[in-house]
Length: 182
Ligand code: PRP
Image 1 (cartoon, protein in one colour):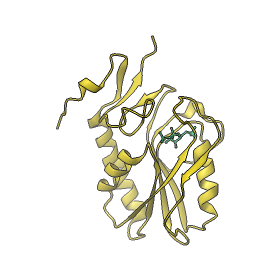
Image 2 (image 1 turned 90 degrees about the vertical axis):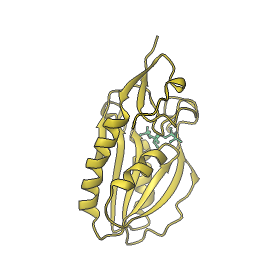
Image 3 (image 1 turned 45 degrees about the vertical axis):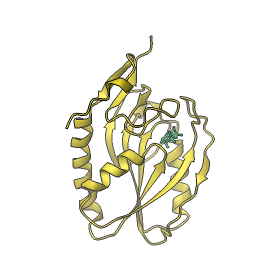
Image 4 (image 1 turned 90 degrees about the horizontal axis):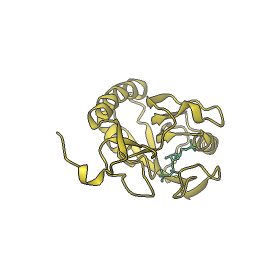
């Protein structure tokens, strides 16, 4: 179903991934994740804030029992470039010792957040630790990272919508846009 959000979309925002393209890919990711985690009762850990829209949609394409938890970290603040300094703003609540864990990111850029999260979560001894990201920017990696499921590989453009913000707003857009520079 189309829902008109044009009032929220500035003229320099260009569609990168439509609502339909995102949902189609989520269905495929959901099938893969279902097959890999069937009957393991995984804990899906959403990395706030950006991943909450992706997580909410993704879990409804996963056809096995699962739990949900969240961690909040911040490396970007309100800026558009990673500061490289990662802060834990909300720690994990669940006990993941011996559990199958799937970390849910909206975007992997430099890879510093994934590197930080992997080290932090491995210390709790999960039985399995995998990562899914909706978007990956291969060109921007500062550290090598292993990501098990990638929704879309994208170019190095500033992207907003579907959970991703532009100065904390625009997370409620249903499609993903890139900002065309004048
Ligand atoms: C974004 C995103 C990742 C991180 C990726 O979070 O959600 O956590 O940046 O970048 P990296 O690979 O360079 O580490 P951000 O700090 O923008 O916070 P937000 O999710 O609250 O918008």
